[in-house]
Image (tube, rainbow, N blue to C red):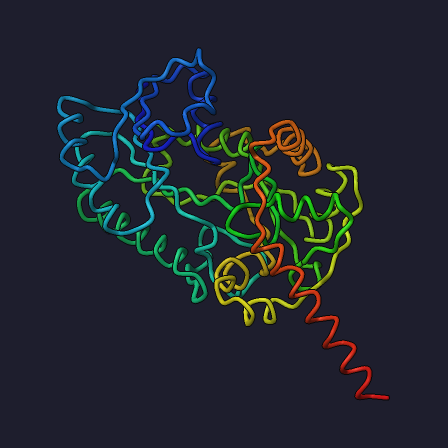
Length: 342
């Protein structure tokens, strides 16, 4: 069985690539080769070192090619979807689009999410773009039989990243370092909303089970863990992985977003909303699928990697200042109210 992965070395896709090779798939990676160091040197994959956005070059490379599965891990707009339809129509038995569970209705009308939960996210342009991509692909499937499968991940993490409720543009290390230094850190809301975290190795098992699966054609399916944790539990699990007890400061999402509107999408449009997933569909399509890595286990692996790779410890002075400013402002407001009520 042959598969073409556009990307194939990111947070979600690296473990998929590894698992598929182990299962005997003939894998071709189409990417610029910047992250291929994540794959073992002895992994037998074919590399097409090119930019998917160079449509003419990719079209020429696809001449005479046919793949059982083509999966694009780096599509974020309808224009990119339309390009892929032009490039890969008639070239594959299954085209897999990686959407996002953040596309589900915000706020939710029911706490338990199934694949039939409406798609609507007024807070995050990223999610709305994914919805538009899904609609474009579904229309192509219904009208012309383009063999699509839509996969919706939700906060999938790997050994290279520590998942948190809020962080800056440079990742989580700034907050982790604050934990280790005994400083206070921000938790959006009161920390009691439920969240679902899925290790990329578990996600890979579900994804690989959908590849070449005739029952998945024309379907949308999410792949997540069945474990639900509050953000307080998540932050304490992260602290335990680094041998510390985090000092949590709960700050309302509204206040954070008012101070920095760029957090509206990631918070109001995603992490501030309780999400619990019904995984019946992926278990029906992939018999035997189960997410086995508990978060407290997975985050220990992430912590071990981060502590043993200094190059991954990227400081974020801007977010560090933002954290201090938010905490100071909240403390000052509390003191002002107390003084006013005396």
